[in-house]
Amino acid sequence: MEIKQLTIFKTAAQELNFSRTAENLGYAQSSITSHIKALEDELGVPLFERLGKRVILTEAGAQLQLYAAKILALTEEAKDVVGCLREPSGLLTICASETHCTYRLPSLLKHFQQNYPKVQLVFRPGVSEKDFEGLLAKGELDVALLSMAPIVSENLIVEELGPEPIVIICHPNHFLAGKDKVDPLDLRHEHLFVTEDCDYRRAFEHSLKDVGIDPISKLELADVEAIKRCVMEGIGIAALPKIAVEKEVEQGRLAILNWSALNFPIFIQLFRHKDKWMSPALKAFLDVTRETIVSNQGIR
Image (cartoon, rainbow, N blue to C red; front, side):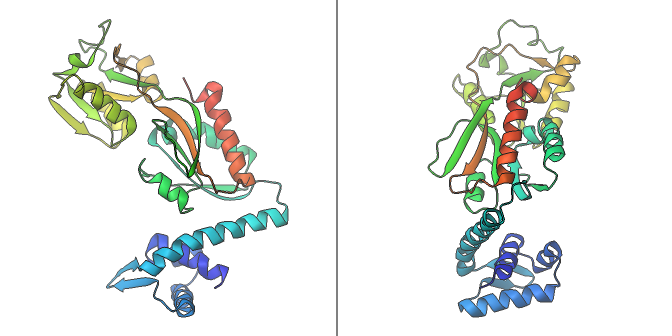
């Protein structure tokens, strides 16, 4: 069992497509097929099942995927330790929520790339709050930057960087915009726009359900910018991170309601697996993230 074979297998297990695997690794597809077959012959079991044009992992393949991730991670760790690499380099795979990607990562990445040009950052979009822990455990993610309710996990190192203020927004001419105090009962006749399933959406909806409020309509949109545009057209009301709406509020295109209900218990958090080796590249990314977010560039 060779490192090259495991690298090819790990990529193929993620892509479930030998053509994309070959393209990603810069090999001919015939070479990918040959290495996978050699690995299957050595282990004596099929690792992939071919169903027409589809490729899926067998049970043996799923088991090997876990070990391949650990072996390759240890291999990279050994290279760094034995080679005494002092300068951060290599590849980091990161997931971050839409709010961070849009409103915090640009300044973070500018700082990081200026100081650590040899580190390649790969961002995994669309990772849900319920999936990121499993991806960290499998080594498919190195770190996650998310805003959610505090969690306790035996398998994760969780670092809380600060609160993520959530605000209720409306059109500036909405009759609730000038009200001294707005409570959930005031929203009983309103149209609501909500994000995809996340902790602050659930907290907002629970605050309404607790007083028996069932909005006239509720429309789920995956994009924060789309939600803001709908609210700016006066179509409805939404709950969003404050950092996402500050510019429009300052320009007078959105208004923040004086919400009287409890604050939303959402915090900016960094997650990594407890067994993940702290490489120079990972340490550099964590340091820059802390500095960027905690130094008032990220928390408002």
